[in-house]
Image (cartoon, rainbow, N blue to C red):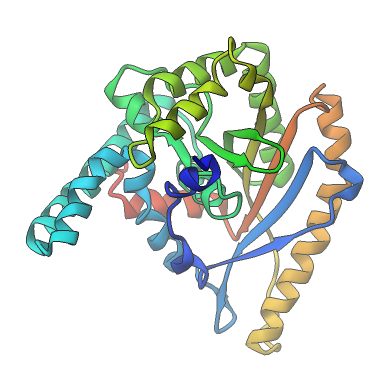
Length: 319
């Protein structure tokens, strides 16, 4: 049984997002082996970022983010059988259900990172190759689960080290990068001090969404979560943090379309180098230097507009 291969069967296909989201990576050697920093920015078309198109694509992922795989399988089976009428009807019902669940859960949480949670789900699966193993959004509205806790739970198995990496998701959308970072680190600090990891592990053990992998693989994964199992010593917790923030950059209309994007990337790189230079000391100041972090930085023209446009797209009423 190949646990790595089995988990990767759960991954979504995000190749269709390659035209809308560009990825940058940075040298984080100075941060040590426990911190990784990446940036994803919305691509340009004719010198203008394609924010609206990206939000449309982002909203299309609300179903796999909010609903368990078992709920989606019926539509998939209908497509495989050639019953496209039934598949279309089920797909429409799934979208409506996912939108309603998402809005209900997020209204109850009084939080502001709605679109960020779905984007973090995508980046965890796309970049880290770590599939979502619990549909927490579904649980929050169907099993009286508390709305606090992580924004997502993902896992990846490393064949070489025989370790299971469990990613606790934290997503923030703020006007400033420092504001998003401070908020994320404060939430993580609270998560640790309140012993929330045990509760999240209990959620995985009871509600894991692993319908598409072999029973042997499920048992192997759950062994990593069992405190009485030797395998649990090889479970590695990581905090996967998405920081969406407003990035003020004035594009020069005198430049060519290609040079406008190049100038934007250059400005982003300069800004994020300062983030990399400071992140280690900020994590140490919080007493989190022994924790592992995957940071995804996503600059947008306006964090509030990004949030509002996404909510409008999924039919979130203005009330």
